[in-house]
Structure formats: C-alpha cells, structure tokens
Length: 427
Image (cartoon, rainbow, N blue to C red; front, side, top):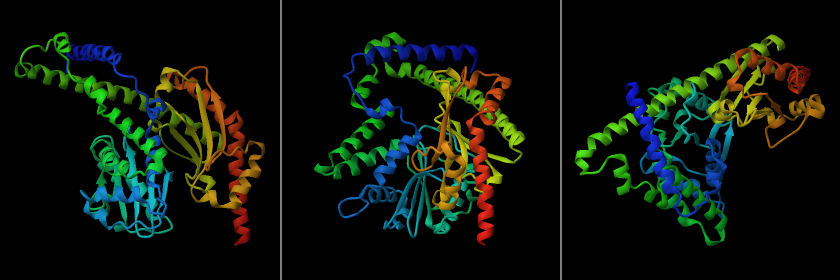
C-alpha cells in the first residue's frame, strides 16, 4: 500500500464518516446506560457473572444451565457438565470468569474489546485451576473463549497445552459475543424472565440492545447503515452494481489495510511506553527496596501491578496501578493516577496475615471492597505518555519512594517478616 492509497483511504473514511454523522442527526433519540458508561471488558465480565449467578425460587441456576446447554449444541463435550453447587467468580486470580463445581471447572476468557492474549495466558489459568482446592484433572477443565467475533486464542497462550491435550482438543469452545452470546440472550434467556423479574428483564434488554449497537444490528442502525442513493452519488458509486464492485472491493481492502497500519502504529507506540514504564518501575523498586520484583498486567484492560518476591505471597499481594486509560495516558484528559494495595487469593482468608497488615498500615488502612486495603491518587503535571524517560523516572521515583506508597510497601514487608516468624514459632 503506497502513500497515495493510504491518503485516499483516510480521506474516504472521513467522507463516509461525515455522511453518517449527518444521518445520525435524524435518527430517533435512544439511550443505553451501558453505552454511556463506556463498558470495558471487565464490565462485560461483571454483567455475564451476574447473569450466570442467577438462581430461581427453587435454587436452580437456570441461566448457567441454559448457557452450557447452548454451547453443548456445537461442542458436545459440554453436555458432560452437571451443575450442582457452582462457585462463580469474576477477576479472581485474574481469571475473567471462573466457574468451579465438584467435578468440573470452567475458565472464561473475555476478549470482547479485542485485547491481545497475554504470554501463556490460558496455560497460567489452567495451572491455577489445577492447583486449586479441587485439584481438577484435564478432562474436568473447560475453556470458553469470548471474542467479539470468532477468532481463536493464539497458540502461545496455550503454552504447554497447545497440543495433545484434552482441554484444547475436546473441552474448548469459541463463544463469540456476536454469533453466540447475543443470539443466546435473545432466544433463550430473555423469554424465560418472569413478570416479577422486570428489573432482570430490563437489564437483559439493555445488554442485548448494547450488543446490537456494537455490531450495527439495532433497527435504527440498520437503517442508518443502508446505502442511500444520494450517498452513492456523493461517493461516485452511481451506476449498476457489477460495474462498481471492483471499486468497492478496492476501497474495502484499502480501508482494512489502512486500519491495520494505524492500529499497528498505535500499538507499537503504546507498547514502547509500557516497556519504559515497566523498566523504570522495576529499576527504582529494586534499587531502593533491595529485592527482586515481579510484574503483571494489561494496560489495555486498565491495570498493571508490581510485587516483591520477598513477600512470599506470590502475586496475590501487590501494588497496582488501577483505572488506567490508554488514551488518557497520551491525550491528557486526566493526569490522575490511582494506585492500590490489593490482597487476593487465600491471603484474604488468612486472618493472622490480614491482622498484621492492618496493624502495620495503621492509619493508612483504607479498605474498599474485598481486595483493596489502601488506595491513593497521584497527580502529574502532564500525562505519563508524553513524558521523556527522565521525567517519567522522576515522577515514578517520587511515587515509589517519596510518598505514602513507601510507607505502604514497608508495612507489607514488615507484615511478611512478622508472619514468617509467627508461623515458624507455631510450627
């Protein structure tokens, strides 16, 4: 694709966008709460989690049963799942949705917003599931991949399970939002909502409408995205369709290539920032706190965290940069950055560890929800994405070693040391 074709594709997209914007002005007014909240992947996961947790008056998981039955129609192995007493969680152990029962476990990986697969992501989630209390075997573990369209996870995501594995070959299902979730909600879920469940019914209708909006399936959108005679004239597509088809195909190809070019350029710049952000963070943390630090996260999903290996809690206790917005990092709509202390996994249930942590945090102990034990907002003079490396390093250093966060990190380290001593004495 040469420069002329790139410029032409961009100009064509702007012309089409202008026509659509004019047409939108006469579309009947519509409001969808989920649209206005700008739902990300975590929001979709929370919605699905709430739906799957639904129990009727007899305690039956009707929506979860319906979901598994729907998948079993094209993936027969899912018919072996018998729902009895499922534990359904969202974002536990960093797994988007996790369903565990006595004789099966289901890992649901949500990619509705197009996030890339993390390195060995599915392998890590499978290993986490195997090491949980139930000690599931391969044949008891199921994977549901939830893309926006129908693309499958990358081979590297499967890691050690990418070949000769029951989980991938038999217990894996591609369940796209467009071709599976949306039809299932419309045909199977919404109809069985009773009259007294009007709030549930309303929520499902809003979600259906939202997904239809994502895929241009709202009636108003279908009319909007129908080519009009005056648009054909404006775009130079008058005449019989066969004669215009080569031009249309060329334009579609050029637009797709231009999109790929721009997305790759955008992601390269964002990934370079993330690389520098991680490198500087680990360097500062290691130099000042004299320990080996681990990191994990996905900036496209709005979070990245760091943890000291000397805390012996793995990644379950960590310092997390939360509520990150990739656009804001560069464009500068916000120069506020939220950092939280998260305690997850089995450590939440360890009363001795939690009590030590609370005591050592003192007045800094500020619990929010189940996993946040402290949080603070830090302000920058300008967005991190436009800082040069020296500026970014100074900003991070002020946070890591010259702010309240230093006291929090020291409190975690002290709690870990005291916990080790406590356990050695008890043993």
